[in-house]
Image 1 (spheres, each protein chain N blue to C red):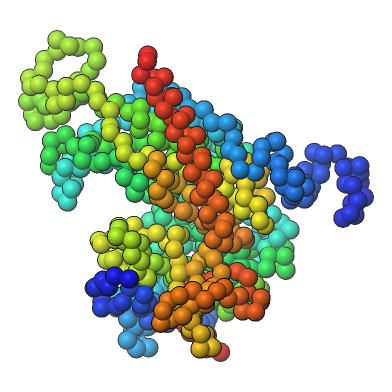
Image 2 (tube, chains in turn cyan, purple):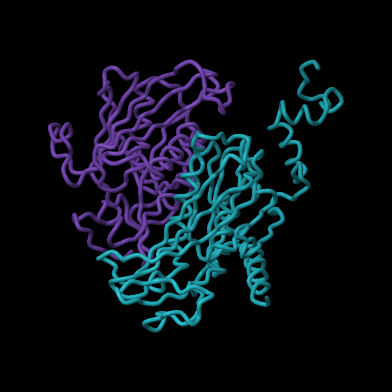
Length: 303
Length: 243
């Protein structure tokens, strides 16, 4: 394989796969000039998204979200704790994002991944600031007991757009969440009422009669785009992210208000038109995701 | 624009006084300190900093031979280490490291010294709001002091979006936390500055635009006669880096 000259037809001298590995940027630019990507998607389209609620039976709320190959498993466990003194009638949410070595060849056991704490913090910020959950709903007995929701998201397959899939799985898990029934026993402690023993020794009435769901306002949905020269690629794969490094993540809520616009550096600068295009692409994507979530939730309720 | 009262008496568009100093650490290849706040005198500058003062110290070591495992050996690599003032390194520090790394990589000319690593260590001396912006400015000044080849300077400013929709620049920690909720640093980093008698408004996500300072009308884009096609956002009153 000699060095290809710039103007020549390179595919004649080298196999496509070899060219893709050796000159990834040129490979992509050949596709982008035809407004298509190697996986035959148009530039503004996201990958196929599926959602499955209740994936973890032992958790109080869980969801498995797949965007293309990127797979995220979210699970929520609820625990009773005493609320802090400055907010005695508010519960608490703890969000953590994990990237176990199964998800990607880049992640090695024992070495912490750079991306994991960043996505984790982004998720916490987005979920808490979007106002999706009213923390007062998580209160049980004002000043004494409140719910602590531990949301853990595990990445099972990291193929780009990790934040999008993680946020989708988190929102779906909260939509699926059912708060367990608890009662107050003699010592004044809250105990979880188990499913089986109905005729058990309940000294007092349960604090909440039946399992209830949280009322979620303004669900946040996001879309990550890559900026490269004057192209905007929606929902990148891991290969695209590693070649073209400028990422923009836009989070809108279900009434299309901007929750977050996140562009952490990168070689390409975003002009106003690029910003507006990214937001417009996200708006479209929010409609798609809302539909998918509604279908998944109504599918669960039928059962 | 509505007038609001800020705790320290600044107007919404007013920044705190800036101070920059270079070549502070003699063993580092380059170093700079950046502070935004009420540094009353040179001696204050060297002390902890008064209550209304965000101060960051940045040191640059490099270029050193070799790159890390997952980095591209055909380019130079930038490594950022963020040291908080107190406490352990957590997710916030990791996020700042990632943002700084990507920002600095976009301003450095990475093809000049391939297969090398330049380490930028950022030490928070005092945090009173606008911490990441202070760090970006300090890191850029430290890179300049070290002589790392860069395309242009990176400058940053923090602005805070309040619930009522008005914007204040360079918030203090109290403003960030209490009145205005979360700082939205990535959405609107903007500033206004004066150059050659004309006034310009700049934002992180767009090219500089000339404005009429009295009527605040936008007069058009300004790209330094075509020489500067990138947006720049910071205090253009970047102080003289004393030689």
